[in-house]
Length: 628
Image (cartoon, rainbow, N blue to C red; front, side, top):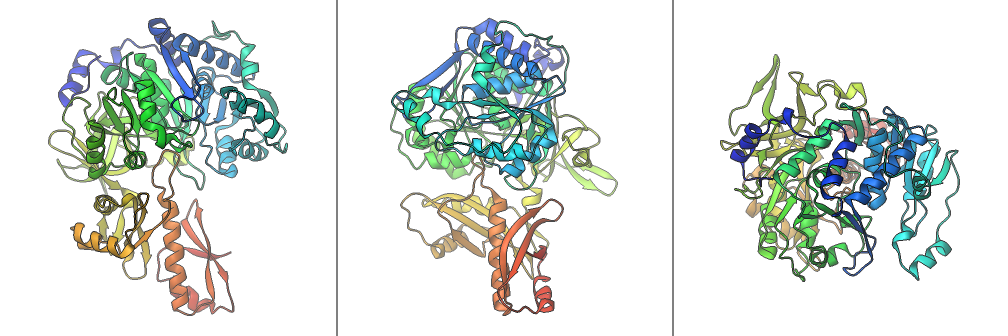
């Protein structure tokens, strides 16, 4: 294993070990068997239900994990899951989640689903993937996952079997005695049969598969894209892409002595592939603190002590989690920590500096996406890090910066911004999404996945993301990168998180605005933040016309600022103000996400309305509206 030190290391890996000739199994089960044979007695995955550093924890060695995955795969086959059938799971992190993820992909096609979605969205995904089996939680205090699953199953009659995981087994007395007494009862609103996952899996052999592990590449996972409104798109992943992501980590980043703390959810590609698959490739140890990870009660407060407990060498994070950690003192021995890897969103320079000052460790920022089975690039862990970039393109990944033209695509010059387009073993050419319509115009020249991200490649081969094509604030035809606003405000010591968006404007189309979450105890005002923005944002057009402080910014399950909710808030505020100023007796009741029209303001009457005057007033804006 060679540590990743930059472009020279990437090129050396390609020369030394052509990916096509790699010594890797063709199937996921073969991949897991290889690490079992090499490192069977070493810890593979650990989990603790509670966040305290002395809380009960349970670990599986590679021998034990291989056994649990084998049992799960055999169970799914018994329940009718063949290579083309889908087993979905709606689970937080625990040892069973890892076994279901791997076992589902061995038996058929596994479909992880975000438990933070609403039941209607969960049901839509179950229908889209034609899931036959759903693995979810047994009713348990302080979680609504079982209730959501029950409601979703009523809308997804194709699911015939539900397997329940009971988290109570991770508790110790007296808490474990109390849970059965206070366990909430779910109303049965669906017709699927309900079985106990551990009991059913325990009936299966753990030393061999009960079916042939057919060699050859195939679709083995469906991962839905991010978002908590509307119907997410579903990306298809093959064995080759899953194993490639693991191979990268095992070849360039980790070995069997490493310990990775993973407070990210296993329904997200970042945790499932660059982390779990890399552990399978290398024999490294993955630790999951609490079912909710970073969202778990007490996780941030105990995080540094968890690093010390498990002797963590690699920290996996996202910028919002890093910002929260920097609000807490480093109150433990974190000398085992060598590297922190951040992804999912741009990392502000100020956060990089704060983290290095607090821990002595530099963050290596990387880039990946669900549509590519994840990894694309990463800053070298042992080489030069360019803060603000997402690093060097990884071996056997090809990135082109392209600009659409009437006749096709043209290549952008060095440091010229265009759309990031990629090809690698994780890109399923032509069939990224399950819905054929979603694949239309998704590829440049038939091979390069159009990511929708704007970026540039510099002279040394580092990739810089400058924005998201759909996230650009377009002010009177002038493109404004929201990252410029966010990075400037993040340098203020009282600011924890920033989300910059374009709010509707009758004249310019959009104007920049920013929503801010403060660090605990901060007293800064919006007026002071506006003055700070004017002093620190060099582009005058990018200075926010509105700044609002919220107690908590909306975030996705992996800690990204969820901008659709901010856009809804801005639409409501701007439209309500315009209606009030015009003396029109109406207001915005809600803003909904329409699959064809995007965000739509739905109005309600507060009195008699001159509908023609209202139509003229709201017609000054570009966003659609309708009556409730």
